[in-house]
Amino acid sequence: MASLSSKKSRNEKSPKKRGEKRNKEALTLDEVRKLGNELLSSRAHLNNLPLLLSLLSPSPRSLDAALEAMISLQSFFLPLLSEMKSTGDDEDPETVFKTWLKERFNEFMGLLVEVAVSSETDEALKEVVLDALMDFVKLGKNGSFQYEMYHNLIKSVVHSASPINDVLNLLQSKFFKYADVCYFTYTSMEKITNFIDTKATEPDMSSSDNEEQLKVKNEAAIRNAYSVLSGVPPLDLSPEANYEMWSEHGISSKEGKASTKPSTSVIAKKLKLRFTKAWLSFLKLPLPLDVYKEVLATLHQNVIPCMSNPAILCDFLTRSYDIGGVISVMALSGLFILMTQHGLEYPKFYEKLYTLLTPSVFLAKHRAVFFQLLDSCLKSSYLPAYLAAAFAKKLSRLALSVPPSGALMIIALTHNLLRRHPSINFLVHWEEEENKTADGSGEGNESNDDGKETAYKPVNHKKRSGIDPFNNEEKDPAKSNAMRSSLWEIDSLRHHHTPAVSRFVASLENDLTVKAKTTEMKVSDFSSGSYATVFNDEIRRRIKQVPLAFYRTTPTSLFSESDFPGWTFWSQPDENKTENGVEMKSIAEEIDQTNVKRQRVEA
Picture 1: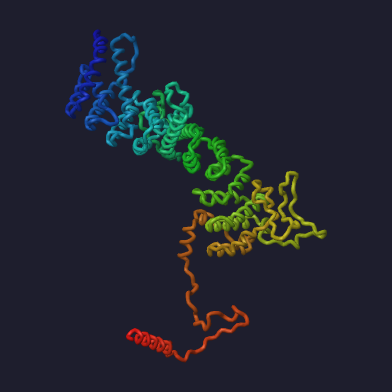
Picture 2: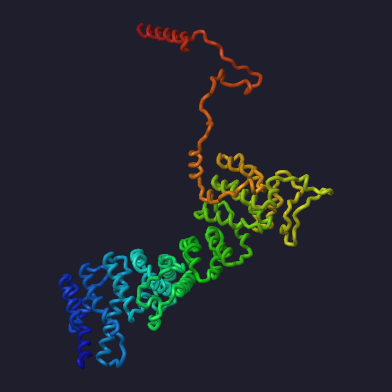
């Protein structure tokens, strides 16, 4: 061993040169297999190690040779994991050897990550390489999960410039079913996402990268980060859950905890904590608009139920709800869950919900969920009458400009509002004479100092005919004057051009204050409607009497006498007609004229 240091220094150069020279010529499979067997048989053939490493790449010359080289390298390094700890004097030959071996191992792990993440890698090679990488993660440190190796893999996946669908599908199908893999995936994602937006300040950034390029890189990393987080299956938090581990020690990072296996409740608690931190770190990033919408669409189903404390999402959801437009519509689901199940207080919730009622929401992609949540939000019996009246009036005004499917939805929502809140039924039927006092003044709503309506009775103000006091542009429902108006727009739907709307509006003619005789409309039956659904329902409808395209009786004149007063129309019998209605006289005249023409031609 005395000459190992000098021997190693010479071998550092010679294998590289020989490897580069021999690698120019494609090695056969037998030659690669021989190199691997020699490496595994004796330390005397350590020079084969750099040569085998040079055969690994995303696009190898020979796929079989690359597979054989990878298997030989895996078989070589696995038994030496515990021996690669470089402790002792730096000049000691054994320490120098272990240091060199550690460097070659790190090079090997870097190649495995590069091959696994690259989109140019063959599917078979990618799967074998990922399996080998996860074996090293599993078997390192006496059975403890090798977090550093796994973190490098996830970091490369997130920052990959090429598509990550293949490697992500392999992780989902083979490894994300293990609880410890999910646990350390969330741990890595928390650290990675904390530095995505600050990547521009890292010292290794080249001077040629401008701000636009950095923005594109960060957006790509954010999309990949979301793909990884959403690719991990939802947590099973049931008491009878059976958590399967990939490594021997599971989620215990310290070897001393291996003897005591944590209980199911402890594992679930740790998973929820890591899950929460990872998602909170991700939601702080400047999300692209398409990712933002997708997150909001699935947040209430896939994220909130698995968080240790869902209330900490209130800042993100309230900020999203205040943006307006489709973002507010999509944030409503998560915000509604926090308000109803986790005690979140949002004082201006109904004011913001009122402003979301625009014609564009009836064409939004997620309108079905929005209208079902709108119906749920207006279900409480503690809702003030002025607020219920404002929503009913706002919806009825929208009925004049929305598609037929939207009009059906508005009728259903208005039906439920009138049934739940009898105090606003005066919007359907005004009784002005009964509400007047002896001095002719109106009794009803009073206004406080800021002009908001406080009482629940209708006010009979002197107003000109055809003037609606409702202010459709007002964003505050309390100042919209809905209590002084009526639902005349709903009445106009009786003459709607779509038969389904004109028929359905008749349901509001019933006395909705008698709940025993009426039932609530299921908003879900109308929330996904469109022109196509309305048309299909109409053509499937069986009609007893249909309009005919012919007269039931033969008309005796072109016009009726009622069309032209003072005129009389009748039909005179023609003497030249036979029983079959042929005009014999006209036919004879045509024959005579033809004969005369022939005589002129002959002359």
